[in-house]
Image (cartoon, rainbow, N blue to C red; front, side, top):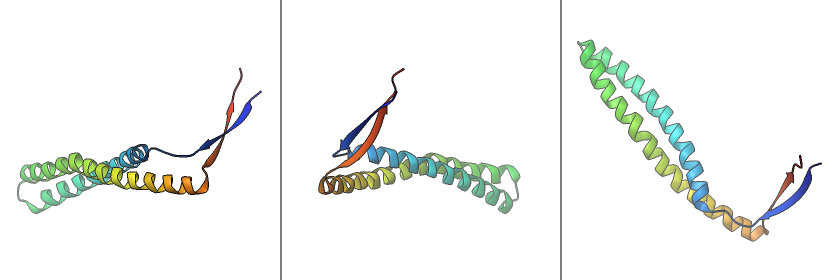
Length: 107
């Protein structure tokens, strides 16, 4: 039978919230980078006379976007997440904590 237990959380590490939000934003940045890469490759291919030249210039900008955008999005997401973690700690301290219900499975 499962034994239920209540645990009171009285604080969080802002860096863990920052890492979570930063990682999530890096994934969003990767999707944006891939879409930007496709768009620039198509745009450069249509605007040049040479298919190879258009693909090359489009892919260079696209690859840079795929590499740089997730890093930039991660950095911004980490800072915003750290701020969220800091604010959450203030609210948790003012409210007396958050109660989390857990249970232990005895097999």
